[in-house]
Length: 187
Image (cartoon, rainbow, N blue to C red):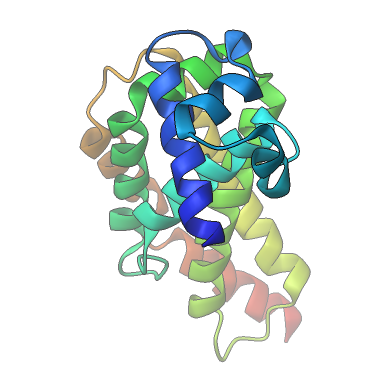
């Protein structure tokens, strides 16, 4: 039941964001739109920004699905871009209503998980320590987030397929190459 209520709150927030900016929406507005009382909202979220963050993470995780492997990370990233575009009114409103730091923190969390899963998969059988794997994942995390933030800032005009295709050219083989370099260094 908790997930159903959270989803209903998310839908109410997205519905309200089509009418007014995030900074003008109150918990009372969300509760009324959802048909619940305010205390029910607070049972699930500490504030509106907590709901926004939960909504973003849930949408992105759903978009990413099982595409967290070396052979499918491009599909996962493309699905994230598409999910962001499908929720453009929500994303643009959030982008203009919260600090860049909050958006970065959310995107870093999401893209790091994607990249560390890919790095861990390719590091099997290699003598590469966690710090080295984390460094590789962080490097790509910062690149991915920078690209996505620029894309959002530019009103999502560029086709996500073009961005992911150019990025794939840069990434293809480089994760494996970096892991092999660290492996040789550690031997």
